[in-house]
Image (cartoon, rainbow, N blue to C red; front, side, top):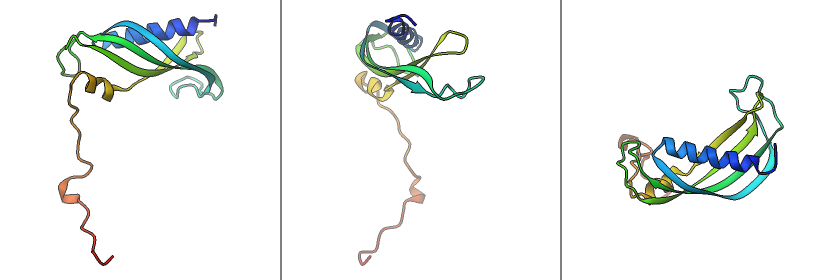
Length: 132
């Protein structure tokens, strides 16, 4: 792949992916890039180890423009941090695995995340004996 081609493809993948979930991206800053090898995705026809890949840590500067996951559009600017692994697919195309820190995004937009308790109250562990 030509020098800089992965960077262009990663920026486009991040921009398109965030647009699908309600964010209009102004720019994507690539922070770090690491070359290495990964295992091809389990869904691949013939999974294998040692597939050449590049991993990018990035920050997207975007505006929350559409309703998503039950949250109304805020039209607030937000920085979205993530990581993308880019690797060649068997067909000659490039595949991407994108990971985003959604908890930070929701927090920056002022959304409260509901969490489930680790265990129902009836399953709380018994109090420890003071003599133990």
